[in-house]
Image (cartoon, rainbow, N blue to C red; front, side, top):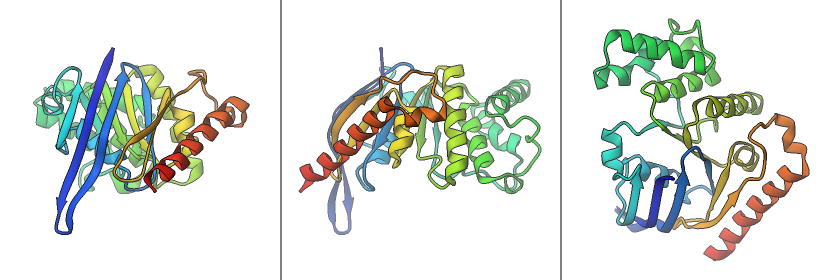
Length: 258
């Protein structure tokens, strides 16, 4: 069952220097429970596409449906949570109060807020840190708190815009492992933007390769890796073959643009 469906999507930004086409003829179906990574060069429209799904940008052509609704209807129905590149935590609110913020806005009861905050803190392995302020946590812990905030109202879809890009490799590896465990426990449908080929291959059931602007989909690669993925799976022939195909797809996308 498709939970996200894009058909012939176009998006052109009007700028002071004239129109800029960010997306061109993008069609894609994301099925329930998929972990889909979007990869491509800077400026190829990965984040723009994610923002269209989240009703943060409006397409100029084509159609996007989220659970059979328009993105704006899906937003009002609380169909998805969104994790930005930066954790975006308010420094004057504790971690638990940062996580509570969307619940407060949505009008959840005080008891429900508390129960949900405790639950998501467990999910992201931040039990005992709810009373801390963001500046008292490492970058990786702050990003986990940001993920907890997006999970707090239990949306079926999680949209993640390069959430680990600013972290060092060791922390990133650990959070990749934790994200896979979280995905397995919650069975969310995840859309994930990344610049990293190993990250895309390690995390995904499906990898969407995009060309330089205007962003087009040049390849959709189905992963044949098992759902249980220790980090050392990255040394296997199957993993390396997938990474090679992604790399070739990125090269072909550049050639297509020239």
